[in-house]
Length: 625
Figure 1: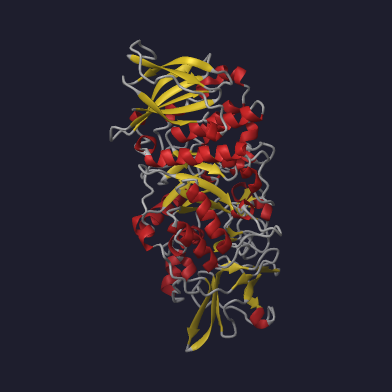
Figure 2: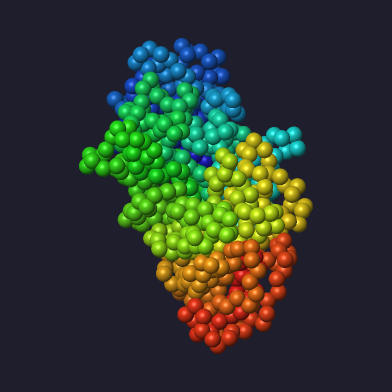
């Protein structure tokens, strides 16, 4: 149950001074008692407003019925206790600016909202929910030496009812948990959970930073979804968007008649690419609003971590702006010093208040120390450079891959600089970019072989893993947020084979310390064959730096069969194949290997070698028998 704090000068002063990290326990609509009378206390921050009233079902939406007052000093907080108001009723704030114009605003701290296209907030008293995940919350360990394999899911389009309407949180819960557990993923990352008015924004233009979207049910229904996933041993991450918010009049935009949550100067406060406003990270109440949102999800909804969207757009004042369109910081630089301080405060608060939770940055530049405790303090960072280089390589006609051979080795130059997630997200399979399998050159057989090889590379390189839904069974069409995934294709062996390949990759990744321990150390990856440009063959060893386990991975990334290909072996003896992307069960040809005993002649700087039959566009994972 959410705590309701008393509306005192002391607590309002703490909020004003950035010392109250759960402002939702003070502001918003709280079902409570005053003087022994049941009702709802409304409180809102609108320091520049000339007048504020609360309107809703309880007063016939009459803006002259319940005017709010300034009972607490000069901090700009308005409040009112309404005996007539009750749980489940809808409401808004009628905010009159200094220009005399009145706009009806949704509550920034609303716990839930009406189903779009309606936009009113809903008075919501947390209903009793008995969590069953105590053991999970006490024991969760998502540190750098643990496997982290993330299935990115857009709930509205993962699966739908036969009538094309959304499945509810409770309907989704067992279906999603069973599917993700069967694929051996460790986590899901949920898109579009926070309330947003426009389906086409995919949930990245948020109006309800404290509210699970009502598209799929109530806050308690969302808790059930999280609880169900935890019961299956699956962690839950959410996309979280503190970088910008929509210009919709009902939301945070110009909340009290002028800039409030956003920077006043449009050279900082307006994002031209997305037609959104940028949060003012130098304003204490805004910083507390955002940190409070993060903690609401982590503490009250038992979320295991947040993937922070568009971090680069927050760090740089000139992000996507031309000369003259941005304002330098006090030192004349391009870094947003207030955003940097915000991230440090945010991550410190999260790690203190929600032990075991993780923070992941979608950050596309070389900004230093993103995952350093002395830097921004995130736990992980998306490896955007790895993703761009690797997709660029795999999209090429194999004839030309030899000219870009080292796109696949370049990650080794910087892979130890941060704790990375190798992410292939929704952004890579929309807007005419094609689905992952359709990016691959060749006919349908070659495309599937290419996708299996891509996934084999992704899952055997250092870094945590993320893959967007549908790519695990080779969907041929781009993602459509208005439609369900084409689940019927899993009845076809060619799609089922890719699905099973990813399932087995996940199983090996989770159970092999060589693939997930010590990833940030130099010793975790050693190249055996990094310069076979003419054949586009690669070989490397993955090793647990703190143990004895190691694996040999060999890739052939052209559609050419190579018989008896010599690959240097790090140790003499007999080897065995753990995974082969060309196996018949995965939709491959089923290339047979010769006896996997090493030969004494030197190759690739090793004293002995293996002779392998390398299928076209294939990956082999081997171990010493």
